[in-house]
Length: 223
Image 1 (tube, rainbow, N blue to C red):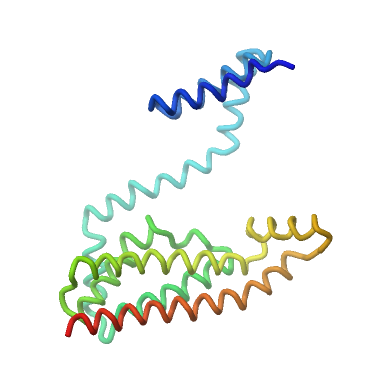
Image 2 (image 1 turned 90 degrees about the vertical axis):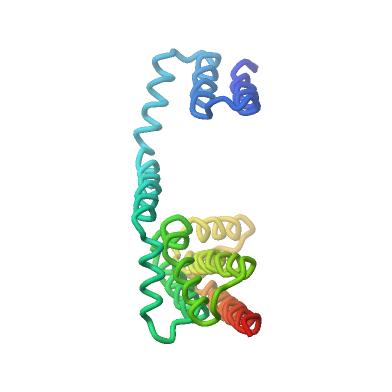
């Protein structure tokens, strides 16, 4: 057997250990592996180009990061806080509970990328939750402020994780189906999605209680 192509793995390990540019390390390892495997250099470059062209849509998602950065620079978080300040009766508990429901519902119908930490929690949900908590309980201590921000991020995680399994065309459902089928339990994705609904309801109730409990603790600390 020809073990020379395995040198590509060594290139990756050494390159990352020496903290070289990851892109150069990966491309160099791919070129070395292809050439050492007996492929023509042009064919290796063609394969890299085809793979990049087939998956170029993945890079489009990174465009949102500088967009969010520009919006934050020009006051997106401040505007989010101002919106909450103008709402009567707004509390952190109510706001995050509504966002949890929104996140679960949108994930359940396949719109799992409509929220998320960089595009929703950091610029919108967390500042609004913090503003709502300050409206209800006054100026927050730094530790309490961090708890509000952490609960905002956790709410997004719980809503997505337990909501997306209701959507039968999601990768996790297909993985579960494949595992069950390999053990002799043929189930359809729809059957698995239906059984994910009780779990999602329990997750909503439990995390909703955690949100309200934090809101109450902040209220007691403010007294």
